[in-house]
Image (cartoon, rainbow, N blue to C red; front, side):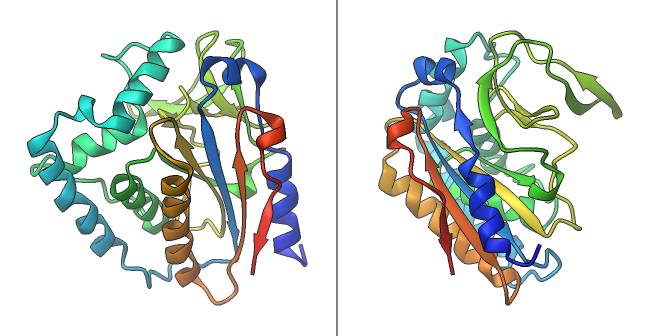
Amino acid sequence: MTDHRVDLAAFLSGASIDAAVAALRPDYRALLIAVDGFDPHTDKNGSEALLVRAEEPARDLLAETPVEELPHVAAWREAYRAFGAKRQRTQNSLEALVRRAGAPESGLPRVNALTDLYNAISIIHQVPLGGEDLNAYVGAPRLVRATGAEAFDTVAGGEPVVEHPDAGEVVWCDDTTATCRRWNWRQGRRTQLTDQTTSALFILDALEPMTYEALAAAGDELVTHLRQLGDNVAVATRLLTPLVTASTPAQEHP
């Protein structure tokens, strides 16, 4: 590809939210950020320092408020119940990270520079946030309610397995498989970020009471850190909402 910026915008322009998901949560919004041209080994952003920055306030927050009463966590719990996810089996990604960040004996996981970066931003801004290897995608990302036939490549008991989402479950998918189950619960192996990833898609999920301004602030901070991973980083963004007419076109950012 000779012009990554054009390719990124075209990729995001194909993204969609299915009407069945829109009916489930009309207040849902997704900020999609496609990034290309970075070097994941160039950790100028100091991912470790960012993780520590996220962990400390999380512990203070949980000392005052149970995790299930945090406003955005509570909203996602309600959304999960709406499509039948069992609370004892499933925690949205924000809740799971907050619990880990607030536990002195564990803290946030250290995975790789890109994953550590978006996990920290997720905690700091209190928003579910996922990252995928864009080069592994086949077609555009789509948020749908599963039929149950979709394949999901994951690990169980330390071994790779292919699972299938429950019928009616909210999943992100491309033209090949489900890429993330239960909205923002667990990401698949095929599109996971690695130390070799140079092009990525980040998805920031928002429900009320999170505002558009707060969602944009989380995306802006993520992009600021990603731009430090190379001299020729290209970025495109798109705000995706259930109402097609309210969805913004993909925007390239020099």
